[in-house]
Picture 1 (cartoon, helix red, strand yellow):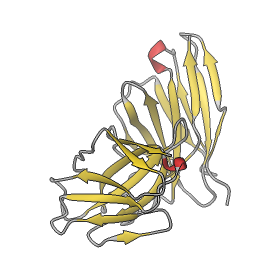
Picture 2 (cartoon, one colour):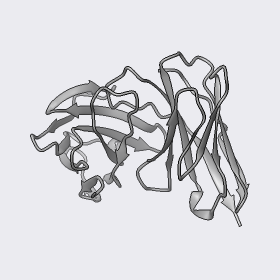
Picture 3 (cartoon, rainbow over the protein chains, first blue to last red):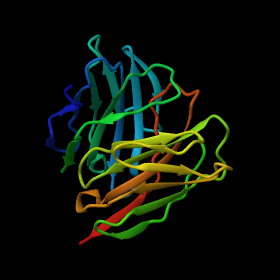
Length: 115
Length: 112
């Protein structure tokens, strides 16, 4: 079974621009979560989508948004980029059903650099 | 979800067992202990999880104390490829969301 894929792997943008990152979950997984990782703040939860609906949201400004499609693929968008948005953006997929065990499988990440 | 405390860093000799501790003194009855690891610049990798019984899989063993206030992840025969940041996370079993709260983790350095 193929793992979680994220595209692009690397991206360089300029302040003020916007960016869209893509995540394809493991086949059969309906939940996709997004995380931001920076050296200063570590791994921080952005949001989770399940069955095309946002199910949970972290403490990030409205410039960060996402969506999920009917095939469970997900995109996240960051508008009006700031230097501080430079980070590794990770996507994780899971079955998503209410369960006592909840293993998440992470993709390799997209390394975003804002100049 | 309960907060966890881990040592910042640890060293281990190659071939020896690596024992990584985690304190979760405020854990409640329905919360599981999860372990993930992140090798440099890769996405985190799920290792193991447990509620109150000790667990073992092909990667590691998880020992949870009887009062559940602490746990230890054991890598029985550490290799250089086990050098990574290890995260201990506590998560409610009743939660159906994908939100994991990562702390700073323990940086394990396996040395030849």
